[in-house]
Each structure stands twice: as C-alpha cells, then as structure tokens.
Length: 81
Image (cartoon, rainbow, N blue to C red; front, side, top):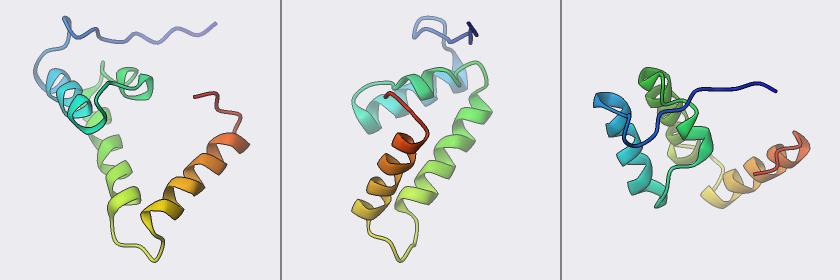
C-alpha cells in the first residue's frame, strides 16, 4: 500500500499552516485531498487556485452544473469520498 506523508496541524508552519487555515475557513474542515498536499505548499496553493478557477470562474455552466459534473466524474472514476 502506498503511503503519503501528510503534515499534522502541529507540524505545519508558514505556507502550509496558512493553506490549512484557508481550507478550514472555506470548508469548515481540512479534506484529505488538501491534507495530502501539505508537504508541498506551492502545489497545494496552485491546486486550490485551479479549483477556484474551475468552480467559480467565468463559465457558461452554473455553479450547480459544475458540482454535478464533479460528482459524476468522481463516481465514474470510482472515488469513494
């Protein structure tokens, strides 16, 4: 089984701590997909920027349609979250 190192809240410093705080403010918690990127805060920040551009940026799709597409793709990919 693969193992990915993740920073706990106590271990997180600097950019990693700021990204975890931002995640908590956005969602009320830190999702595992966010936590797994904590060892590389630059990647985490870029991933969140991409997510916000896709989900909140200009688009002919409504926010609800984007969420629905995300659910369908996750289901088709066999995601269990």
